[in-house]
Amino acid sequence: MDFSERLESLATKVRNQSAAIGTEEATKNAFVMPFISSILGYDVFDPMEVVPEFTADVGTKRGEKVDYAIMRDGEVQILIECKPSMGALKIEHASQLFRYFSVTNARIAVLTNGVVWEFYSDIDAPNKMDSKPFLVLDLLEIDDSIVPELQKLSKESFDLDSIISAAEELKYVGAIKREIAAQFREPSDDWVRFFTTRVYEGQFTQKVRQQFSVLVTKATQQFLTERVNDRLKTALGAGGGRPTMAADAPSSAQAVEIDLDRDTEIETTLEELEGYQIIKAIACGEVKPQRIVQRDSKSYFAVLLDDNNRKPIARLHFNGKQKYLGLLDEDKTETRHAIDDLDEIYSHAEEIREATRRYM
Image 1 (cartoon, rainbow, N blue to C red):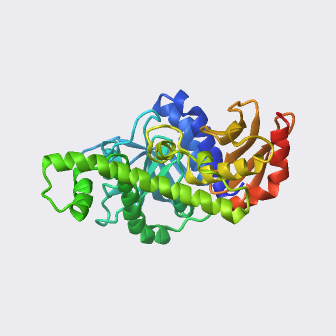
Image 2 (tube, rainbow, N blue to C red):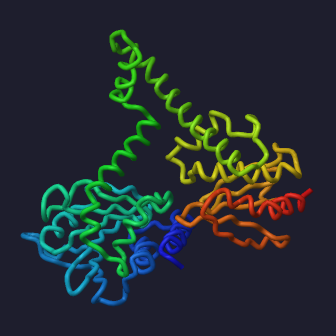
C-alpha cells in the first residue's frame, strides 16, 4: 500500500476501536505504535530507531520520561508524548515535551491520544517548543491537504528542512481554518460585530447583538447550503446524469447539519454528498428517487434502497487521499474501484443499475 492507503487503513482501525480503548497503554499498543511503524515507517522494535520511555535529565527534573523518541543517525529527531484515546488533548499534557525539547536535538515534538496528532516545532523561538501545533492530524477526519507534509516525517521521505520551512504557513493556515469552522458553528461577539457593522448603520447595542447573532448564524448556514447545492449541480451537469430536482437534494436544514455538526463522530463531506447524488441520478432510471437514500458511518458512506442496509447499492470510501467506489455482488462481496474524480462513477453506471434492480 502507498502512504495514503496505509493512513486510511489505520484511520479505519481507529474508527472501529477507539471507543474500546480506555487506557494510555492500550492507546500506545493499538494506535501509536502502528502509527510509528506503518505510517512513519520506523521499526518500533529497533532501539536504534525508536526508544520507548526515553529519559533525559532536565535541570532539577530527574527520571522523567517521554513515551517515544525517534532516532536518526544517533540523534533524537522526533519526541512523542501519549495520552489515553478517550481524553481530549490539552497543551498542559505537553509539559514534558516542552522540557525535553530544549535539551535534545529534536526539532519535532508530537502530542497524541492516538486519534488526534499534534505536531510542534520551534517556529516562534529557537530551541523552544511552540505553544501551538503547526500541523494537526485527526484520524477520524483526515485533511487531505496535510498528507504530503505528514509524509515528509516518514523514514523514507524524511526532510527536516522542508518540514520546518513549511511549518509556519501550515501552523497559521491550519489555525485559521479551525477558527473559521468554530465561528460557523457558534459565532463569537467579534464575528457578529464584524458583519453587523458592515450591513447595519445603527449603534451596535446589546439588543442588536442578540438580533444579529441569529441572523449571522442563519446567513452562514444558508451560504454553506448554497455552496453544497451549487457543487451538486456542477457535478451532475458535468457528468451528464439525470438532472436532480430540488426535492432530491438535501434540504437546507440537512445540509447545514451535515456541514456544521463537528461534535459528532461521523462527518459527511461535500464530496460524499456529490457522489451520492451521482449514484442517485444513475439509479433513478430503475426506481423512484425517494427510495434511494444515504447513510453515513465511520467506515464508509452507504447508498441504500429503501433505507435498508440489506439493500446496498454502493459505498463511498472517501476518507483517505485515494477515493474508492465500493460495489457489491449478489453475495454482498464488495469490490473497491479506485477513482480520482467523481465523474468516474458514471463509468460504473450499469453495475449501479444492476445492484438497484437486484432488490426490486
